[in-house]
Amino acid sequence: DMTKVVLISGSLRAASVNSAALRAVRRIIEQARPAASAVSLPIGRLPFYNGDVESAGTTPAVAVARALVADADALVISTPCYNGAVPGVLKNALDWLSRPDGASSLTGRVAAVLSASPGGRGGIDAQPALLDLLDSCGAITVEHPPVAIRGAHQRLDGAGEMTDPETVAALRELVDATFEAVAIMAEQRRSVLG
Ligand code: FNR
Image 1 (spheres, protein in one colour):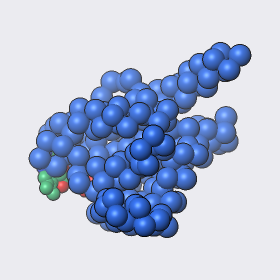
Image 2 (image 1 turned 180 degrees about the vertical axis):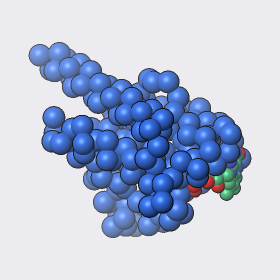
Image 3 (image 1 turned 90 degrees about the horizontal axis):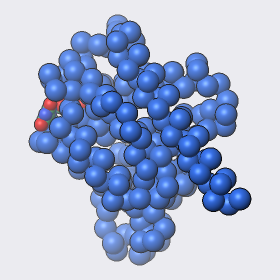
């Protein structure tokens, strides 16, 4: 199983609970699927989307992001909820990845979504907007019970890692659903190609 997974955190904070959740996802993938790879795509280095910047030629950070996503089998995106939607930095990253028109690196990409927040709703209110966005960008969203990590700051251990069993179990199910979706996509591609 050489599946390549790209992890995207919607938060730029060093102590982000969403980034911590994705580090837990990475550990789960490394343990359960040693041949697969999981790398994170930092979105903070992307400039604000600007059509002139795009026309002027590819910014290195943009080229790297596009190539990484285009080469991936699946994305796992963890987002905070900012005022009922995704943070602007995440929207910006998805906008870049959706370009150029007709050659979105998100097209056909399997994408799983989760959210985390210190609050009692676990950032779940950002998930419908994120799923719609991914859909608009041509990604194939993974169907699974929503994973919204409530009280997320209390789930970090002394090392700042999300190791509590309840969260790890939910993330393991999300990872399984993601790999299953990748396998189904691969099977569909095979049957279409003959
Ligand atoms: C928030 N936060 C927040 N939380 C929430 O549960 N519902 C919300 O609508 C909002 N809105 C919101 C707007 C803005 C502008 C900020 C900066 C924050 C709180 C947010 O969930 C909290 O900061 C999380 O810790 C962010 O996730 P990271 O950075 O820890 O991954």
